[in-house]
Image (cartoon, rainbow, N blue to C red; front, side):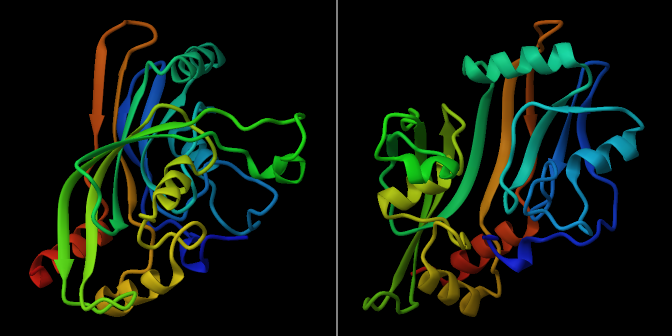
Amino acid sequence: MRDSPDFVVESLSCPIQVIYSDEHLVAVFKPAGLVVHRGPKTLESEPILLQTLRDQLQQFLYPVHRLDRPTAGLILLAKTPQVASQLGEMFMAQQIQKHYQALVRGSMPQECRVDRPLLHPKHFEERFTCAHPEQPATTHFRCLKRFEVPWPASGFPTARFSLLEIRPETGRWHQIRRHLNHLGHPILGDHRHGDHRWNQMFYHRTGIYRMLLSAMRLDFRHPKTDEPISLLVRRVEAFDQALECLAQESL
């Protein structure tokens, strides 16, 4: 099941943007719709981030974490197997801080933490056995801004939205999206875990159909030099357009 046909990148018109690079690792901006590496549901014709970067940089690269297909933002890759192993251990030990922003349905509290174990979909059929138990998953949410606009929705005369800063402690499958859906505040444009009626309403009002979740920042210590590194990217244009539209319409 695809999140949406709109999120399949058939071609890349410009090189992948490199945010940071040294002899050990590279951080790049992954566009929405681009998969990190080829899987069973990947089209033969579509570009793959890992292969595109290998061709662009003329160097073999090793993925150490993932971003969902419809998620845009920062992703880190290693240039050697040793560094890949070190970065993987750092992710497991929560020594690499990931920060996201999302636009969600409803009015969120100022701060919120979700501790809700999650099961990978390949184990759904075995969820009533102990063969593959749910894995711990923790996500921190902070509300940056709330909007109320005069758009009738769900039987109410207005619609409310929240801009969130998100910090996941763990990295389970679709963790942020599933935790927000559990809270009743799904991400706008999430066609798998979101609210179809609100997605359609938001598209009708703004012309924006893609998922409004961006991987904005990575903070960690370099695995070789121990120097602190903080990487930051801007939100994608569609995200800023959505916020501008809400600000203009806000009551």
